[in-house]
Image (tube, rainbow, N blue to C red; front, side, top):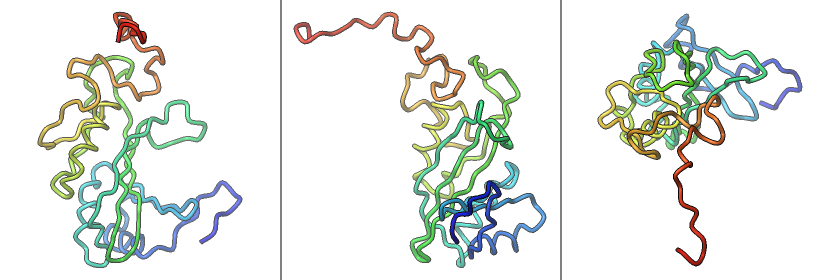
Length: 190
């Protein structure tokens, strides 16, 4: 399909979307195509089931999780279904297809603090794709989204006692004092 100039998302004519509509009819799945890429939005409660179906169904056979990442839609100009999203980039080598599965999360607590938010939790997909382990750890570290059942959910890019999640858009660009004690290293003292 080609891009349309309107703001209305195009409902994709994609074989995987047809499979999902058949299997999860009336369960809140949405699908759209933008610039040739198909995205399916799944409800949080059905996420793991949808992803398992996409991996295990022979007609889908999404056997590779290429990427998993978080998004913060704070102050985004369009209305979204939640402030945060986690996107799963799936590839089927046997069918030469790619699809994105997105799930939205809305925080229940103030995100500028360090308190763990029970609304920012998803089931892990390490049982489906072992390679999700590092991606989920990065999403946890940067956005504070926890993955229930993850075998080793700990920070991966910042230190364990780091006081925040730096890719949240309400995190200050200059940090919260993390750089105050850094010694400037010049060429002569290095």
